[in-house]
Image (spheres, rainbow, N blue to C red):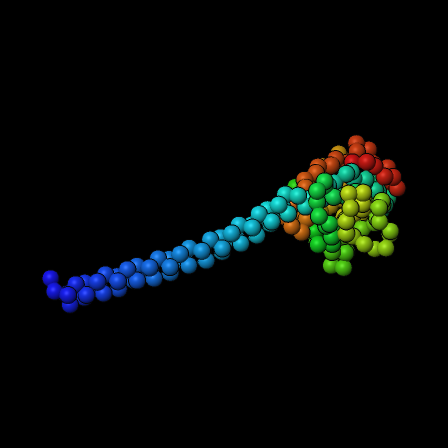
Length: 191
C-alpha cells in the first residue's frame, strides 16, 4: 500500500473518529439536559406532594347554634388549627364542602365572596380579622351560617353533617357531626 493510500485511510479513520466523538458529545449533552429537566420536575412534584400531605387543616370540634327560634340548628361554629408540621394556611383561600341530608355544596372560604362564612380568632391571634393559621397554637373558629349558604338546609334533630375542609395546597380533612336528639330554641350544642 502506498504512502498516499495509507494517508487517505488515516484521514478517513480520523474523520470517522471525530464524527463519533461529536455524536457522543451531542448525545451526552442531550442526556445531561434531560436529566436536569427530570430532576427539576421531580423536585417540584416532591414539594407539591409534601405540601398536600403536610399542609392540612385540623378540625377540633363543632358547636351548633339555634338562632332563629324554629327548632333547627342554623349556625355551625367549627374550630380549626394547623396539623403538626404544617406551613401557615390562610383559611380564606381554603374551600369547604358541607353535606346535610344528602345535599352537598362547596363553600368558598373567602368571607368577601361567601356570605355564609366568617372567621373569629380564639387562641394565639389578635381578633383583627385575620384568617391565617400561622402557628400550632393558633385556633380559629369558622362560622358557617347555614341559612346563607345555598344548597344546604338547617339541621333538625339527629341530622348528620359531613364536613370537608380543603387547604389551598390540597390537604383534605373529613369530619362527620350529628345534631342532638332534642333542639331547644336559642341553645348551643357540641356536635
